[in-house]
Length: 437
Image (cartoon, rainbow, N blue to C red; front, side):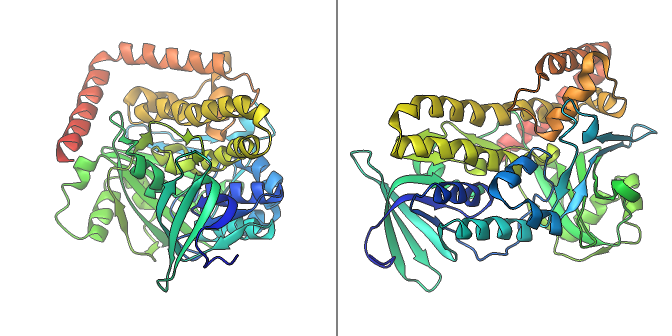
């Protein structure tokens, strides 16, 4: 049968050609399954989220794409923290983490990075159709699969009958919208402004590719150097602050940059070379990541604040554990219970572990700890392991992270008035956003 025939059969249909979708398509095609991947856009296409974690690198090795990525990427050895309330800044290197082998990550232009991954899926045998938007998914009553309807850019309509459907549609959250399982995160609301600059002042030598995080009174900035000389700069702030905008998005972005002298100084000779984009409240999760014949991966399941650059890693890692669920569902049902348990654990653990820090990243006590890190009870090594994405393996970081959390709570109590004011302000901002929805 041809793709233009009604309900062309396939084993797995993947919605979305981002990191999660391309990864699982490559893995399943390599296992001999009939995989169709539908991507609404045409690669290469712009996407924000250029900073990766060291834990991504072993996944690149397993996919066979590490050399391609290294050829276009900027090496990233650590994180710089800068605060307007502290005289010193802090440089933390991944090589100081518990697992010394996770010493490097990459900054990538996502258009090129995502293109590498989707081409790899094609090479591994997946049928990839770009400019093809999924319009409906009709699940069969006997739970044997679903009919997926899509439309090409020229208007031609197509359909596949798949045994399994993988939703890797990112923030489109296709299946979550269908099932009404998407829930806005009441504990964290944030909005972002971002653009690309040339001529930004970077750190020297080996540290040139490090990501920098600048705190300011309304949130924090990212500063991500790319290999082609471009630097991605973005502000993540309370949506209530974005609502104060009275001028153009670009001018508001420039005015926001001016609120952080340390970052503004890095951009004094820089030129803005892209449109400034803004995105509103975007933190959410879904009540479930799976059903008998479908899985939700990456941002299609959960999206959290990008402060620790966890998005691409969590998306790709979810694809690896999901591949085992698909394998068990379609070929080895005796392995399904164990595969499902692991999938559920991984999908919940990643957002949970990063979120504890994300909810508190603008708290003054957390800033103090990040700006003056100590390795008592190996808490610094454990924290760097978390920042590296080393949270799913056997690295014994958890007791030390519990100690770090205890130190944070003690520091918050010792600075009770400051902590209370920070909590009050956060509650007001979240409450303001909730009323605006």
